[in-house]
Length: 66
Image 1 (cartoon, helix red, strand yellow):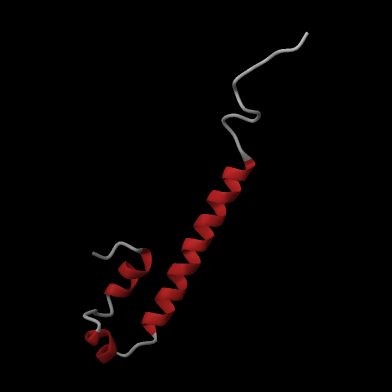
Image 2 (cartoon, rainbow, N blue to C red):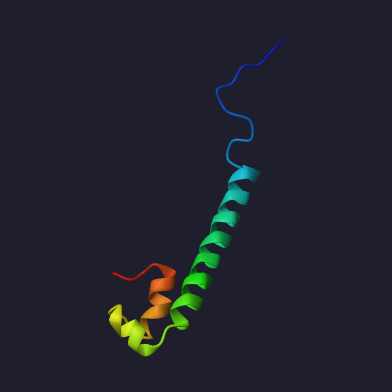
């Protein structure tokens, strides 16, 4: 006797979702690291030309700047 269900296999837990979430966090961390390194390499004068101060670097790198 066969059983038919509308529920997909592995409903509720997906190794693909876990891996995608982990990969997404890793990519976001790396983007923030690269941004932080690039902005830290600028002089105070160059940052001022962009309308930034040195303490803005972490805020910008995390994407919370408005």
